[in-house]
Image (cartoon, rainbow, N blue to C red; front, top):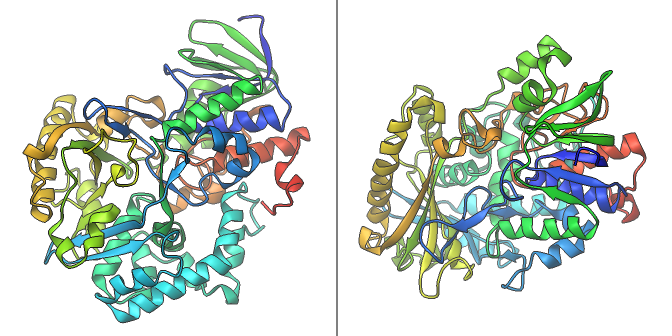
Length: 548
């Protein structure tokens, strides 16, 4: 392999590396090789048996909202076709997207899927039980978002952050008086923005917890209100699952790459980028093998590993290294417990609204809109929350590939301490006590949720996640946190935000880049756009007449 040379070398074959390779091969006309430390490609697109034989669990990315892969699906219809799997479709669209059951009185509220309730009239009927005013506000907000905001938001997601002084699509729409968006929301907290729109504390608490799964920030964090509103709250009605698990995305991407002549080398860990006279010339593997790159190298690792390991601090400025070293990455530390069940949870709240049993995401919370802010304060003090704010994802409700016939698969999510806040023995003990706490809280709302209903469960916590290099040492599922100082032109830091690095010919992308931390293909698409500028490659968006 020492004599092999490629136009482009990609460090890491996770979802960002796979999507970028597809573009570089098909539209860039380059020869491409990906080098991956793990035994298979996919990264966050990972699905496997764990809770019990025959039950398929997602261990990282587990839901897909509208827009996650819009460009990829348009530019690679073969990828979408290959990803359909045995179910005959790439996505599972629920009838009821999400719901909440409140601890105080077992009352509930639900949000119907935009695909089954486009006008959101059925959702409004559910919200009206909490507040007639909020029901009207929700319908108006949904219509405004669909007709005016969504096109700008798609442009925002599918473009690199512009230089300072040039407004991005989201900034432009915020200044548009016809958008219905209040410019003051840019500086407000999520709780302040939601209180501007809704009057029911219970409904606000629901939106905050539902959003928290995708944008995990405290409800009292300034500068995050508009992102939480547009991406999380309104977006709750567009949540979808991936048929047979998100790893089907990876299988499809690998096939597209191979069909276009790309190479993927698993169990091949890159140790260093070879730098000569300030330019990236290739990579050196941990076994000493060197592979040359004619044109470029792309890292999909986290900023810390990029700067301190792949590049080396001798090539970078003190300020850049200092910024990377102190990136925030303590907020998105969670437990994902996957449960193989004999029967689906049957909630007491279904007696007043049967739709709650059909919700893919069920949030077991209280009516306090400040609950998440209080939970964050507890975690910041170095304690795991005693009062759980659980989200239950009912995978097999809409995806019959996830569990054997007649059985059920669900996942519970709770935010906890970073991995490095406890010892190995403390985490092992926590795994057991947390399982008991989850079952106690679940049983309170669904009497059939007892240990007799459990076939098996798979506990994944930050301690497990930090074994992946990108997510160490905190076990942060988002690589770095989504906070105001780490968004847009500053994600992950200003010097790296537009995918170029200080090393000529070395680019970087991944979940730590604009716009948000998800297993979407935005970061790959945006990185390709930057590479297009430098190498004059094909631009599929222009060929298709898209503005993004």
